[in-house]
Each structure stands twice: as structure tokens, then as C-alpha cells.
Length: 367
Ligand code: ZN
Image (cartoon, rainbow, N blue to C red; front, side):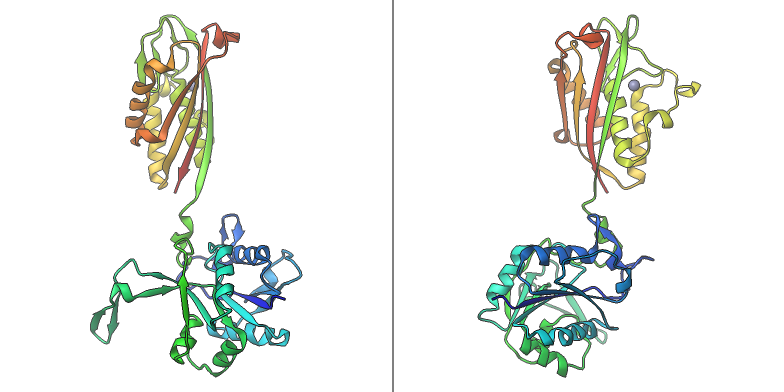
């Protein structure tokens, strides 16, 4: 029978995390930071009990499985860890894994790997080799650590419960992980390969990475004689042009709406109202420029754009390269992230009779 326990430490003061809200309660991938670790622990089915150590346990309203216990932590990390170890002693644990809730992205595979290695070891520590060259300072002298010999340790860290308990009880020093206890006491530690994605969220900026937003845009304009046809910012020889307050460029208008959607900034009409004279006959490329400035101002960049141009004529295949080239330069992005598809409507309706052209766009952007 498994006799593993999982301690999740979430009572840190997050001094380096510059935010009014406590780091543990910040939403990351739609969940409080600590919740990722709880759910992975539960899903792995490796643990008899999962203990969340947190200072303001009253703030947790959500109900987890009955094997998840929530206890109050101490002032320092080592205090919280010891409180949890004392708390689970009555269960007579075999193995205990200790984990910092600030690392939400470890894999369940890593949990299995640690427990497997605990069969023959008393302490199992995941690590990565340092990518950067680390210097350290003693008084006013600087020293280099040899990069190949520098290990960056992660959590979860796995231990034989009794061994860790005895070392923790005796410990008087402030420690930042339990591996330190073993190393300081010349106890053997088994290092295993950690995970690159198992990053620690320390600064507010760490959480901003990876956010992706999607936006959708749609537009349709009537074709009328005696007007030039603009699609994707280029002039295309055709029997008619698109009617509209501006040049009627359905591709650019849809691109704009999709980008505004992804930015959660309403729609094209709220930014360029068509009852305003200054936008009359405006080239759509100019409107797009304004939207790109909004993107840049908010530190957002485009991941990709997928465009459906819906018309019988002109044939997209003839103009695809030129349209993509034009959008590439208007948006200042690589052409590899734009896709343009042509779609006819089997001669049905207004579009089928070449009386209108429509376009839809999906985009994805990131911070
Ligand atoms: Zn339009």
C-alpha cells in the first residue's frame, strides 16, 4: 500500500512579488497558484494525504477531495515545513514530498519519478544545470561558480519521512529547501533530472508569460461600380469596388476587429465612428496603424492570423502573395504567421452574384 504524503508550502510572504494580492491567491492559468499543485497531487493518486500549508486558510472557500488537508503555516518556510511534518507524524508516513506552491508547472511524471527513486534513496532532489554563469560574493570579493558544477534545485523534493523529520527537528538555521538539511548534515542525496518548465513564480513578471488571447473579426461590404477595390491594403483591378465610409477593405476591417477582440477593446466602429467626417474615405491601412500602435503600447504581439476571404471573384490564388506581403508590412510581422484562404459561396446570394465581398479573421496575440 502506498504510504506517500505530499506537503505543499504556500505560506510564503512573497516579498519579491510586487503585488497587493498575496502571490498564492493570484490567478495563474485561471486558478490560484497553489491549486495547480493540489490538483496534480490528487490526479496522480500517489498520496494518502495532501497537506496545503497556508497562512490565511479562511480565504479558501473551495472544497477539495477529503484527502486534502489545509493547515496554517509559520513565519519562515522552514517553520511551515516543520509544522506540516509534525502534523502528519501521526499518520506514520513512509515517504514525504515537499513542494513550493510557487512552482505550478511540474508534471505528474516527475512525482512518479521521485517516488520511484525513493525506493533506494532517502532524499531525491530534481535539479537543472545552470544556464547562466553564477557569481557569488563574500565580503567585497566576487567568485565564479563553475557552471558545469552548478546545480539549480527544484521542488517537489522527496524524502524518507523519518530521516527528514529527525533532521528538521534538530535544525536551527533558516533554510530555503529541505535538500539543504541533508547536504549540511553530510547525508546522501540522489539528484534526478528536473524539468525546464517547472519554473518558480517569484516576480509578477513571471506570471505574464504565456498569456494568449484570441480574437475574431467579420466584415462584409457591397460592391459598387466606379469605386476602386482594395483588399488587404492593395489595389486590385476589378469591375467594382467596395462601398463604405472608408475604402471598404474587408480584409483589413476584419483583421482590425479580430485584434480589437483579442485586446478586449470593443470594435472598429467604437474607435473609428462612421459618423465622423475625419474618417470619411480614410484608407483602412491608416486605421490598422492606429490598432497596431494600441498593440505595441500594451506590449502585445501577434502569434498568428488566419483569414477567410469570401467571394466569387477576384480569385484569391492570383493575389494571395501580394495581399500577404502587404499585410506583412502593415502589421510588421513575418509572413509565416499569416494564412489567407479563398472561399466561394457556389454563386449563392449577394456574394455569389458578385454584389458583395465578406471576410472573417481569427487572430491570436500574447503579452
Ligand atoms: Zn468594413
